[in-house]
Image (cartoon, helix red, strand yellow):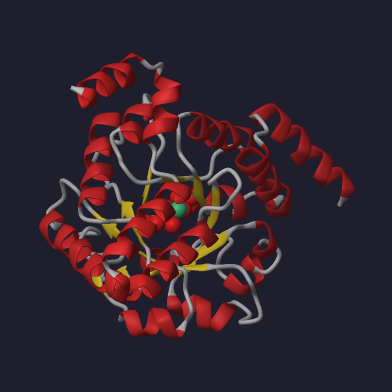
Length: 307
Ligand code: 5RP
């Protein structure tokens, strides 16, 4: 009876309020973990670790995330403007909340004297010139992720592709092992060459990733993105995609946040810009200071003038 009344009240709420009430925030997760700890004290330290790692990626006070993606080489090789990864990453490191990359680039191209949390790509196996991009496996042992002191592990799933089964089962297995160590898992809903990127498809892929236990899901922005966010019970971040004009990338970021994404995992639209530092700072202002795209664009131009 009480449950029905609450459900009726909830359904009558406007969409924006529902979004605020339903999305599981880091704070909510901490509450749930506290409850879990009470019933299972033997894993309490690991769950504290999970929460601590997650809170380094999705930041307080607004539960927002600016992740810088530089993992492209794992299937694209030396991507334009990422040929010298160290040179590309160094000036941007202080402005991102976390950096997403492979262990090869982490060990060779990032100073270990950094406080920036790392999100480690642990899947691979195909190349842009190979037969099928979706044929990925887990390529990194969790022991190496821990040795590297990363804050999360990331892998792709290819829903609707030839290797859908393999990548989804891999996600489940990665979550199994990650739970033992309190390591968050970021699932990337990769989209193959011939697949659409509409709300119906992306909702399916994101929800499937969350159902397997992913802690964060990365996907693409699309029309009616609220539908994707609302049907996914864990935080969503968006990829930037191919390079587009800076102002358009700012609009994309703003629209995604408005629709309920917690942030971005953006790569090419930052480091392929002619002004990468002003660009990342403009995107940061949308994510953390609630700037709209116009204000961010103004900041971007102002920062260019100052340099
Ligand atoms: C590839 C990835 C990339 O990190 C992702 O595409 C983000 O980079 P960009 O903003 O350049 O699209 O996960 O599978």
